[in-house]
Length: 197
Ligand SMILES: Nc1nc2c(ncn2[C@@H]2O[C@H](COP(=O)(O)OP(=O)(O)OP(=O)(O)O)[C@@H](O)[C@H]2O)c(=O)[nH]1
Ligand SMILES: [Mg+2]
Image (cartoon, rainbow, N blue to C red; front, side):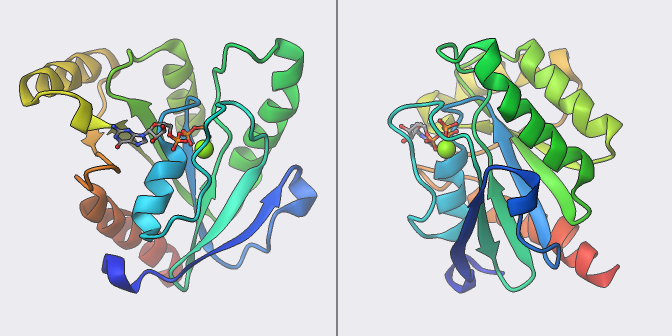
């Protein structure tokens, strides 16, 4: 699927499990800390200003579903780890997100986004462990790489890889670096594989 041929449309927002759309398409979950660049990446993948890029992080508490070609969907998640939100307020978030990730039969993979200028934290380790436990394929993305020089970028990626023992996929939605390769990878490995099964 080339970027110019991506069929995309906003489908719906869901605040609980009953509001999810039907399970007829392969869904890719976009996960990461608030402000990691999730909505901006969705716009870059879909080649359209369609997902809402937030000025006030942590506001969205819904899952937003978008068509991704004929057989796929992309699901924009509310960000985690927003300091202004109390423990009590994060409970519905946890239920919605963990409910989706642990029960959705047509979930084919997750993109876990981390801002290249931030350290890897226990939140990321816990999220990756959750995905592993539930057998959900994922890619760990370093976002906003346009913010660093090549030297600093390589240093930061090496430090993450040493800590996490994971492949890191570098991208910049703003400068369109790595986005085409990412789109091709998720279509081939996740959406098309699901179609054939
Ligand atoms: N320099 C740079 N900035 C980016 C890039 N991607 C996103 N941003 C900026 O980072 C900020 C957050 O982007 P969003 O896409 O709203 O992040 P989000 O993860 O959806 O945030 P929440 O919805 O609050 O969880 C915005 O100001 C974006 O313009 C990028 O590739 N490069
Ligand atoms: Mg967002």
